[in-house]
Image (cartoon, rainbow, N blue to C red; front, side, top):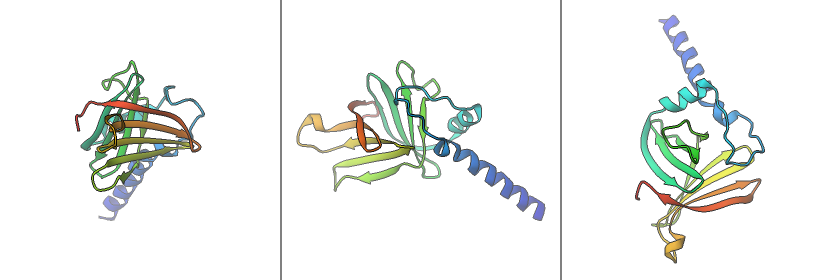
Length: 157
């Protein structure tokens, strides 16, 4: 029984270390549209992650973005640079996002950090104008906004 417990602990540590690879990887200073390469192990981990619920699926001229709640309640950001599609390997995958609820009916902001970059996907359900409502992608580096763009909500929420 002790051998099984020890083996189980080793397997758990191996799985946890694989899940932390993406968030511990140092960020390069490349602009977000530049593809980031991942090892085959990381690609397999991403591909095998069970999705509990898709929260956002949106597109723009440059990007395809999804935000998912995984089975372990982790929030995951996945992005593809155009002309890639969701059938291709993603260019960026971030885990452990936070959700910031906007008032009593105003939507949600999904926030992800990657080194000195901050990725925010805003789902604004209420606004003063039609242009201020919808899904927006905001990219910031060291607190300075680099991109703020409205996206097309493919999911239809």
